Structure formats: structure tokens, C-alpha cells
Length: 296
Image (cartoon, rainbow, N blue to C red; front, side, top):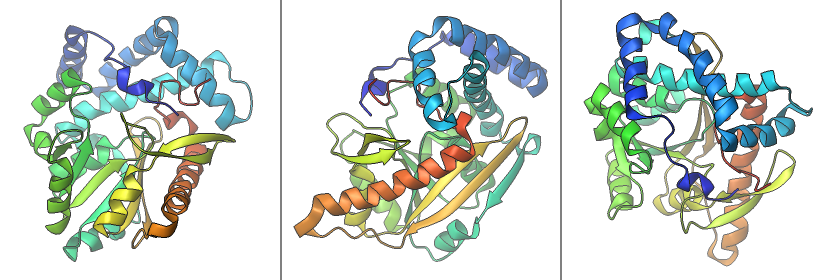
């Protein structure tokens, strides 16, 4: 895994994105979904980098060489989750069939006013959890992310639901880790995506889909320093209007010994990579890292 995702720019003009949003909100989800086929075709024909990333990933998870329709399904799944953000941010949950598995894990943490880290990934939709927290107010969630990476998309999402802006802790800016600590002290949940390496971030090697891949060490180091529980989260898109949200207890506390710091960080990160791979094989077309992940 490398940091090439950080240099990737937004695709599509602001005008195009605004048009899709207008169609979605004024003509409805069924009509808007028809445009997903055109978007999928565009990416397959014009987006060389994402297409190659899909071609590199799919053989690893499917255990066979993919055909063009496998690539199309992969891109279409991604486009569908992006479109659904519009409706989720507007609070239109009635349009979706959402099944929550082991949701009591999160609710119990929040009820005890004990902060915890929700460790997710770019598998499926993290947005469905964030909008569920904001619009349904079942719990208070903050998300640690690079807000400036896709500024137009970020601004558009915040316009659709201004409350979303209040959930973001801008990673890479001064004071971000202090904000995380304060949020956890208030008993809030802090969401982190642990499958991409940021600039100048420490890494550890892990076995992942049959290869050695470097994963960021930051999530485990953060959990160890703050001494809070870690719960895994996966929001898998099942096609149509169906989503499955999975919660899984990862650790009551991530313990890292100073004398074997590297080995302990690698151990915990490998555990995360193994659970990510398990869910990934359950929903292979939900993997949305469209860059040279394996440095092929």
C-alpha cells in the first residue's frame, strides 16, 4: 500500500455533481440510479488509474481473472454508494432497508458515557453510520478525516446537511488529536478509517489478500495512548436499497509494550487486516480503494 491516494484529485466537474444532486433530489432515487450506468461506462473507458486498480484487486479477492462485467459491477457499486449519500444526508432513511448487526455494542458504550474508537475502512459506506448518528441521534459520533482532500465533495455534503460539518475532526491540522481526546473524554464515539496511509505516517507490514501490504500504525497507536475500547465497523452495500451495518468488538484496550512496541503494533494491525479481509470476501465489490494499493 502506498500514499498515491493522497495525490488523487476529485473526478467530475462541480457542475456535473450538482446536476446529479439536483436529479436525485427532484426526480427521485430510481431516476437518478439510471445515470449510474453512464457513470460506470465513463469510468471504465476514461479513468485509467481506477480501472487498473480494480483489475489488480479483483483477482486477489475473487481468486480468478475478472471479466469486464466484474469491473463494471465494482465501479457501479461504488457509484451507487456515492449517490446514496445524497439521500442519507437529507435524512431519507425510509428509502433504505438497513440491517444493523450487534448494534448494542455501540449503544452500550454510549449509554455508559465511555468513549470508544470506531475503526472502519474504505469497504462499503462509512457515510451510512455518520448520517445515522447525525439524523437519528442515537449516539454522538465524530469522524477523524482529511477534510481538505476532496474540498468540493466535502462542501457539497455539508451543504446537504450542515450538521455533518460539526462531526468532522480535521486530521493533519493542529489540535486534531486533542479534539479526539476531548471527544472520547465526553463519552463520544470517534470514527477512524484504518486502511490508507497518510503522509509521513508510520506503517507496519501485514498479510492481506495473499500479499504483504503496509498498513498505517496510527489507529493502533492512538487507541493504545488513549486507552479506550475499539469497535470495528463495516457498512456493506448489498445492492438495490439494502445495507448491512456490522459492529464487532475488537479490543477492550489495545496494549502496546514499550519493550516490544513494533511487534505489538504489528500484531494489533494484523488482526485488523484479517477482519477487514474477512468482510471484504463477504462483499468483494464494496472495496473502494481505486489506486495502486499493492504498488503493482
